[in-house]
Amino acid sequence: LGMSLPFNSIVWTLYWKIQSNLEKILPTNFDYIISPLSSTLSVLLTSYLTQPIDVLKTRLQVAFKRETILNTFIILIKQRGFKGLFSGSIARASIIMPNTVIMMSL
Image (cartoon, rainbow, N blue to C red; front, side, top):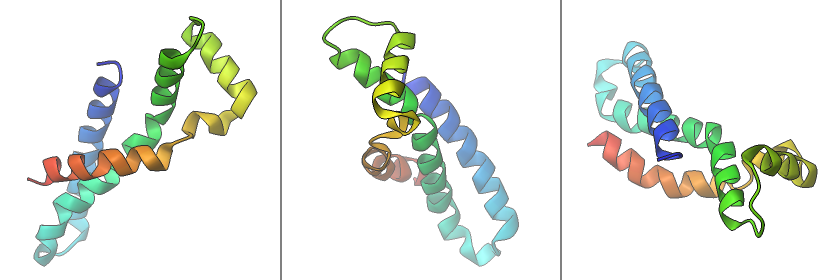
């Protein structure tokens, strides 16, 4: 629930915003591509935006010693730098995208 709620809130908000904008930009003969394109873009953006939450969640789950979220965050920044928060972004997006795009496009 801690990961699903932020992801779903953001992905659906972005989806409707992107779809609305694409409907204004693209001619009507491109209706068939608006939904898949909207869902693809919204999933990519959302998976990137929520990646730090997922990285921290995973770190907390596999930690040998219990730490607070703040301590886990500080340790991660010291070990991997700011970009460590986004490690695995491409893999996560490639796992999430197919299912979400199919679900949103139907």
